[in-house]
Image (cartoon, rainbow, N blue to C red; front, top):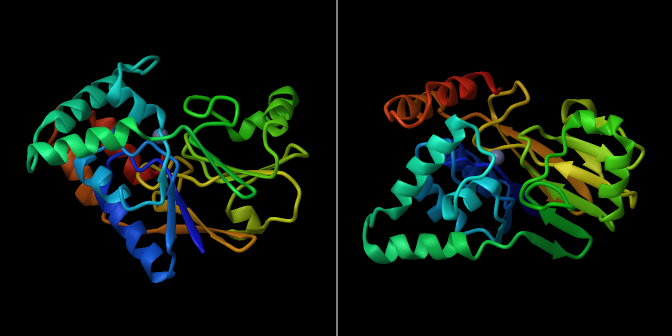
Length: 248
Ligand code: ZN
């Protein structure tokens, strides 16, 4: 059984709760689709944890921590500059700092394994393109994306979990009762966000892949602790704390 996680955004409480849930399920392989850092208060600790994953892809915030942020709004930009300063601190020592930078710099942008294609954003632009639920009304976009997918593509980036079928429908986890069987037809699966869900459910989200069945998992975590940390850091906007409580 595999676990696929994404968009942790330096939320350590959420990542720890998800990791405990993954361990309880007896999962041996964890795949991370990127955005380990950005927005949240614990970039160093979250990077250290995802080093245990089999694969960790590069998200747009990971890329922005490494290079210069482009197309970031002022709140996200300020957060990523603060994140970079955290990663530049030699804590607990210089070699730990170097190990984290090296890990970030070596993150791949796509990963293939058997019938699975993994990306952060989309198969067309793996780091930056969003595929939103309402894109099912944009047949041209969906056609172009599905043409690049041989079987099944797993992605994150929007923080909105759900399934896109080739017949242009979007199914939320609730609509499929949190489980969906891969049946040979092409599928795009957004695994949701561990550290900053935006579908109205504040619980951390990730998926298990058990044979050919996708299971959506929602995991409660100590959100108030994360909120307090964000509120105590001037460079992290209060909005970033508030949205965690609401899952927006
Ligand atoms: Zn993200």
